[in-house]
Amino acid sequence: MAKKNDSSGSTAAPLPGEPVPARGHLGVPMAVPEDARAPQSRRVRLIAAAIGGALVIALGSAAVTAVALTSPGSSTMPGMAATSAPTPVPASGPSVDTAGFPTGGPGIFTDTCRRTKTAADDPILMPGMAGASMQHDFFGNTATVADTTTKQLVGGTTGCTTSADASAYWTPVLFQNGAALAPKSTLIYWRAPIGAQRQVQTIPAGLTIIAGNENASAPQGKAVIGWSCTGADQVRLTDSPHDCAAAAKLRLVIAFPDCWDGHGLDGAKQTNVVAMTGRSCPASHPVQIPQIVLHVVYPTSSASGLTLSVGPSTQGSVDTAHADFMNGWNQAVLTADVKACVVTGTRCGPVSGPQATPRGGMKR
Image (cartoon, rainbow, N blue to C red; front, side, top):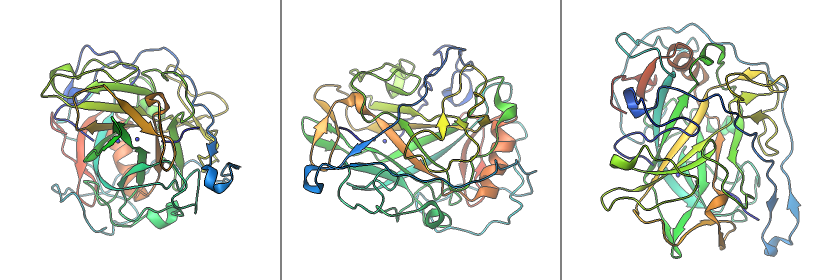
């Protein structure tokens, strides 16, 4: 049985499910295909034999209304250090100045979160069971532990480029010939397909999501899990890892579902969110939210001897790649960026500072 993996290169790799030509600002392709992206598989976690082999499924949800997008308020901030203490932001949210930023493509902003630790914990699937999960690389919030909740994340200290994002992100540890490959950080895209972005609502407070299937026995498809390289070969996204040029590094790209059912916050059963089909969400999951896409770069150029953690001390197939997200954003700031960048189809580039101010242009 399996469970969950994560950095960034100098230029952006293609997003899962998108064609590689016609690259625009941020190196992101300018079109999204109509082909369907299959819903994520439901995940079940097998506890290690030491726990008795019992199957544990984390249950629970809380009623919540889809958060309406607020009109932005005002300010800009320069970039900040990778780790920063939270700074209070007015509830109304900042105003977001996107003057001169490229428009007409997929609405995008990015955030980079450094790796904060590696641990056999899983707050979504195995809450409170420290050391019983597969090994994970954690990014973002610096205090994430096995029993962390989304409420505890908000306002916490973070390793992200904006202190407004105190979310927790984690992926299973990638090994090469038995040795762990430690990524420095993960580059995170918040985006929506062209033609569908105006229906996007902000990700609700308290939401947890899982992307990918830790029990997969075959490649999951580039729309969900893709592999690429940094550098000149970045446009080639494949279902399985492939060798990179000597100076390049291997990159894992993981796309999260982007249609929410409007009430379920707990992602443990993987039923609260599904992937969009074409440019619309199904009636069962009518609320379109920004798609989160993680880019994790590993310190290797070879695809030989790769395995992923599938237990506290066991490894398995790279087909089991996946990622987890617990929302720890300052909601007012997240909503302002979603409205100004994603909904309008504006390529805002990297965000930084306490108000997640976008820098725009070609840089990340």
